Image (cartoon, rainbow, N blue to C red; front, side, top):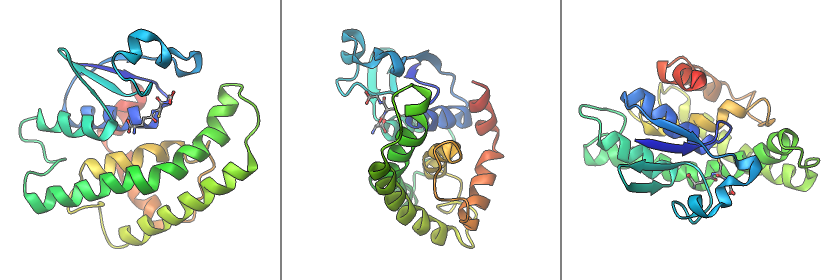
Length: 204
Ligand SMILES: N[C@@H](CCC(=O)N[C@@H](CS)C(=O)NCC(=O)O)C(=O)O
């Protein structure tokens, strides 16, 4: 299976983490977002949204990181990241939707303004956008911190939700996320960072 990705892409990272945990080998193909390769005709034919990640499984092309994670889990016999019990799966699904809808907007804004712009020579951070990102992420991260108090993982067991939500936190320092004081969130994030899949993704 081939994954079109970028090493600095949070959305790609969550898929790579899941693949490593599931023991699935991915042929990683870098799409250089700084050079605009995501807008080239051959890539747009794969994903008209001009975004990574995109999976190509022998001609079956799938975009959207959460859908790709679920697909990979469904292809891994005996996996436990994406439960088959209806209630357990719904719980993981709930947090994946929450990640996309509530957690990622602030992460993406701050990552772009405080990190990607500097790395790509795209000018200074816009203070209004930084303030907006801090407000969005501050609210979402506080909710997550409260949820994690007394819990080992986001759902009953380690799941796709942990990998999906931890992925953007890899950038928390460089992107100046307002999360350093959230003790439950940081304890949980340390556990995710200790997983073999995290180290393997770092080395990829
Ligand atoms: N909802 C999508 C978002 C993907 C996304 O935003 N990808 C970014 C990198 S993290 C990208 O490729 N941006 C390039 C662009 O928008 O032109 C997913 O979860 O896969």
